Image 1: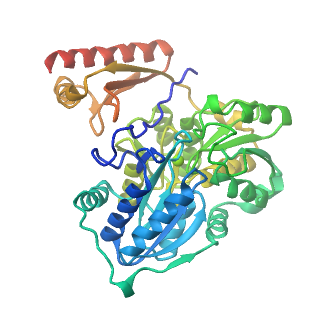
Image 2: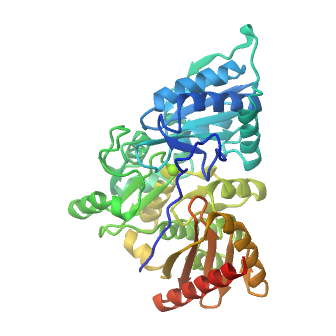
Image 3: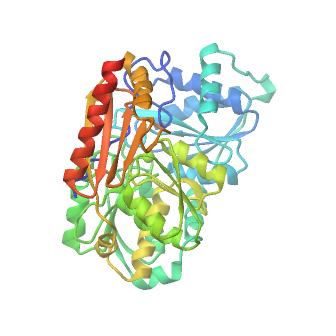
Length: 469
Ligand code: MG
């Protein structure tokens, strides 16, 4: 299968304070260049002003500057009267799991997920454990820009405590969702590539508690990421794929920097695409109850639709972005969510992307179904993709979208995020890039020829729209 996947964009190197601070997934920047201690201090004063008073849980991944920014966070939050409970280095889904369980009003994670090592960032989480809504981000930014911070009286400054139980509580929470006894009988052999970050504190231990024989790669915390780039995509997982092959392991698992995603390698050493592992998990979860609902962004492909249809489930489409998926799951009480990059949201555990939960769901499937991972994947339909970029000047991006909406108004389409045109034989999605002066066209079809043809149709539409603006 030829399958080109997009990676989420980085926050650019512009002055973060002059542009919108929050990107697709929090505030990100280069450490001590445009993500400075001063910025994080002010951002945490703004966050405390919007959420407080109350207790805020904080955590970090293994990135450089994690400790430095944690101190700025503590100073800013406590100055507004919020108390802080510091969970230390843990995966972002472990922090998200703890926020409601500790009765916190918010959580803040110091992380830049899968970005290169020079980046770090701040992710703000609401009292329900879900990343804050776009509206709350805007409120925080308004306080930041206007300097209208709450300042506590001298005797109302927040307290600081530490809590080392997050990983124990989180691991028990995941195990409570699994058939632990059955998995234990299989003694699966698993190689885990921890990306030199916080996934290494959870997944190898969790799998051992499930009776697996575990070999860990890149398990030491190191913010220079000496083992590999923290984005779990095929070109970064060659060592893991080779390790699975030569050791005869049942599967390989790779996390990103904050361990909210898991990528899988089958027993032959082939790296799976995120939509394949997502589809496998969906096929099991949705089959448990007819009429379930699956929440997924418009960028997800036909394999997900096929699996949902077979299980008698409904699909609820969202904009592209994990925050939108989480909020929609919570709003409608869906049974599952997922993204084509391998993010899986299992609300019976928690309605957010969770790398360790995803990892153990696939392990459980192999144990319970008695099939190898490659056999399970071979039962899924195969589709082909084409991805093209079309240059569009920054100032024309918005008028171009309006022209596209007009041009396609009589077509079978979804307009939640860009324009998705649906044909019998496939589909294509046209979206402006968040940061670059381009439009992306992503097409999918049952053959490569169909995907290429649909992609050409999408590019022609963009060119037509360009002439109108
Ligand atoms: Mg991540």
